Image (cartoon, rainbow, N blue to C red; front, side):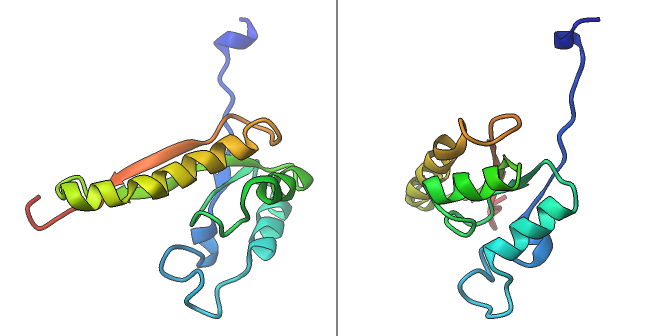
Length: 127
């Protein structure tokens, strides 16, 4: 069996596990800061972390340095799309662009597989 025939599993954590997500970051004063979350994830032995809200863990070079110094990869990020609402969907494109720009900023400097987006349906009364 060659290396291409074997599968490697990489396990990551996410800021939401520490209470840091879109409804708490910048709103709830008890939300842990990025450095704390990154230190905890690294100390727990995870290979990577999910992005959480764009900017929470840092942007561009700052994020790349924070991840690389802890030997953490970036697993990806989560974004809910209002697929049943064309106007609302279009308003999310800048957020998607920011997420993908963040992926590009760290891709060549952190270990592990490249980050991937998780796109979810935000649901609606119609659905």
